[in-house]
Image (cartoon, rainbow, N blue to C red; front, side, top):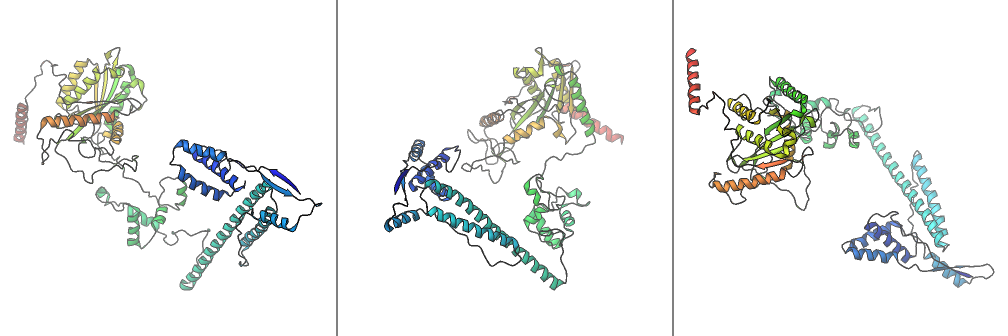
Length: 597
């Protein structure tokens, strides 16, 4: 009898071949430690991963140095030297020694779970019989490998045998799942046959399907598509009431409508499969069989009012842009508009936007938006400066400038717009757009919405535009307006949507330095109101100028003082008319017109 000393090989990357983080390195080190202690190079991975998870839960909250030292301790675990006996035929071994060796060998026996296949199978279940034969053959191979495993003490042979045993166990598990699936399908087919037989005996009808699988509900409800359209679409009489009447809002309402009107009951999931999918190229869209031309969509805010002059206004604006494109270095396009007033003390925007938030700091808003006082709002005047020589054919990108004014103290008018344009000209940050050779560009195109403080039809606005024309020494000034109700075509509206998104879930303070309103919402302290308005306005400016728009910085300015930049410019033969005299003249004209009739 000879004794050999060997050192088994233990894999330090047994769980993760290429670890990328500390957790994976800890798992490999812990697995190496467990294999060395158990003296089993082929330690079962399932139990090893379970033990590793429990150990990681205990140590992951400790400092990084302690975790790294534990990993190093596991990886430097000493490997004990094992020995085994080799018996020669010339020297027989006694029965006591043979029994001890058998006991030591049987102590290394791995734990195996044998799957017993069902032998009571139907005579026509050929697929199940084939899977059962594979299970029986795999069980025989496992028993043979088990016997070889118990009769050897070589660690390398153990490792090889354990790999083969693991592969056979995987095959055994797959075949067992296959048998279960086949039995389940056979049960479904048996129930289907019983259902058809019952239908034949009760109604004397034979159900035949052209394709395999569960039949579509269109067989039971052939007019399902027409009924869905009738429940959702509006008729000719309801077209004018479309904004006031909503027939169906959600799938649940459609489900109730079909059940009450046509006695057609469909589950919520089944009914959604008969509608158009939200994304036609997704995997979930495959479940939508024979969908109707109806989809679940959110309410869009892109409806525009029709106007008889809409084509003329669009052509006029387009012609002005083309004229500016002919002289790109000497022209500038300014798109201006007053954004929706930003309230104070309540959410800044009424519309909702999807935002990212942490569950530790949830964003909460008041359940009711009660108005706080009258005219306690901020009015942003937005200007989009477009350089024709530095943009594409759409003329929608440029540099944004915003002037914020309090509604209660100042408000906006044509004079305030002229003051804003004068501030832009004097600001050196806009010299690249508004000036050429340190002189104001001679061609100006203004795109406005047609409001009372911007529309060139009103005499007061015309006077202000003429004063600006004289002050800036412009050669060509064109003010183009869009049709009423179609302000969405104004290029600056595209930037306003971005500004509204920045105000999502934000409430500007109204009483930073104390409340200036009484219980009826009236201002009782004007100076305190000015301070509170200034703080809210400067906060709004800081918020908007934080991120660039169109790749350029946004300039903002809070203004709480009225200025009249062009009042010193007068025209010969023009005298300002008092408001009382204008009223008398208009009143006399109305009386004369009534007398003629």
